[in-house]
Image (tube, rainbow, N blue to C red; front, side, top):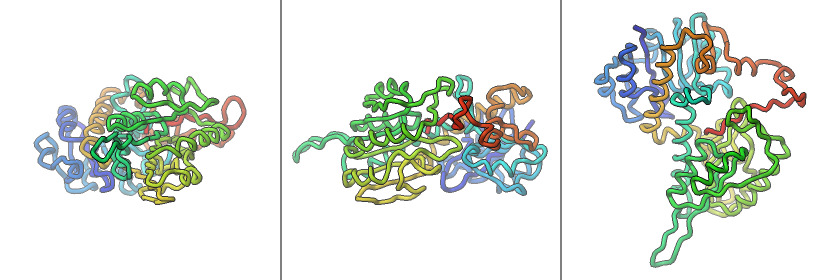
Length: 391
């Protein structure tokens, strides 16, 4: 029976990749060891893990030395830490941080990263990115509501009536849609923008108004993702958003492009035009940010506007986030145990980064090719890479 080890994540996120319920689920197929304290930040005690059937170990080194499969959500290791041949599973953000792969390019080592999970029906239950994005959108609204000088719902009292706050949501992927739904439940007036015209139905079904900017580039082959836009269209978007920003009490931005810098949507001029007391929550600061003034994990004040750039906002709801992640990773591990010998399996082929120490992932290999090799068939030299709108 193979031996699965679960590592303790960094204190910044407070998450755990496998909960006690996940241990029970996988316990019939694997021996499971959990680093002591791994679930504490998410509200899962060591006792709960032992009751579920896991063995507690004292250190990450013990996990790395003893286990055949190592599970962690975002813990990265130096080459000398990886040690003996084994399989690593996690969320390594490899398109934006390709250098992390180098530590795992050792004979006998396999690496699977679930940020590259295919968007298919079969893989839906393994979609870590969507789980994190959903919590991020929810948390962004709560954070904005706390920092805003205005109440979110309409309130009628002896002193008069307070109008509902106006929210502007940039991006209608999983994070954006969850932000819309949460803001609407709190009673806000919500307007939302997404480059994909197909998002209109989803936005309007949640009770928000859809902002349309004509001329967007769309690609039916992108599998439901947005694609990179031209500089001219991005400028048209900014002009439209500038008009919306003037009226907004809260702006939440969620636009990211895997392997590339996040698109700039909120300029410094827009911030200067916003009302005092307004709040911007930028969920893309880890890859450059959608707001020109946002900074990763920092709060910036400009013109009496509060700009926040959390990069691990899902950690504020660590218990619930870990519950979702554990389900995602459990389904993936079950799939790996069942289909690991199938080299053509779509899910494993899409998420396998390193096989026996060799870089094998097609998307990672494409990043390493010369620019001319990655040019689009039209010959314009611009790759229309799929833009993740799920977070």
